[in-house]
Length: 382
Ligand code: PMP
Ligand code: GLN
Image (cartoon, rainbow, N blue to C red; front, top):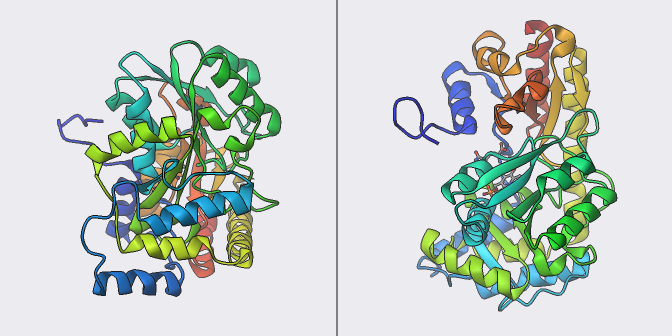
């Protein structure tokens, strides 16, 4: 977490967004939409700010939002979640992840992750004194090897993190993998942390939460985020649902992380969760369309592309262009080609990074013209 100069190293996302600003490059690095979420939600939040929602929200979350989350889980997934005891609203999914790892890990615990993995997992595991045990997801399928999973989970495993749909690969895990993860967690009495922030951004069919699998509910914390679902990443409103015994532990930790989160945003998100299904379907279809524009452009530039099944990102393999080190390429691209992407190697532990070295992650949660400009630059500049 600390750089060579003794100061906190900026995250890769901050570093690459700063590079985009410095060079004027097109930013397909950090995953944030370049158009804001629905005006009706923003209006409700504005009314809250101009009204009286400016003091601390209840620590567990505004009752309206907890009720909406409960109703959403029932209507979309058939999950019964008690709003009083089985929900906690957090400052983004990031805080829900932090609270889970801090609640269930002790020094010497293991945390199993599917690699490449979202950067906060490793950082918070290390703050909790836990050791990361990554199971690689290799191209082209990006599904874990079941024997590898079996070998990674043992009695020291406190938490298994399952990010589905997956950042950065865009993979959705198959049923055999998901059932294996639940079985291993039960066998070794581990908590499953289901990071499902992209639940509404799936491109074919519907998301099915890990918590709906047989035997999963009682040991699963499910995390989501209004940032992704509604293109409101700056609001940092997320939540966790799960059985009372697990959520109680998260609420305890959250009290001392942020205590409470964005009061004026919470009723707006509650309204959003109740929008008609067409709203969600249209957004997912639009995002899928943009992933194809990006994928076509990357192919035209000479890369091999792994099409995502959901989420914000497309993975490009630069090896066919003779570029084996995408980390070095990513550092040169803003200046030399005018495009920012994130090297997949930064989501891996150093020992495993070589297997991912030629891969770059590009975000497609951007306007069509922005994606087209980026791929035009890559076509001529790579
Ligand atoms: N998990 C994953 C997989 C993500 O991609 C992100 C955001 N990039 C987060 C968690 C964090 O979400 P939030 O912004 O709501 O904290
Ligand atoms: N989740 C976003 C991504 O993967 C970044 C969030 C952040 O900057 N921490 O790009």
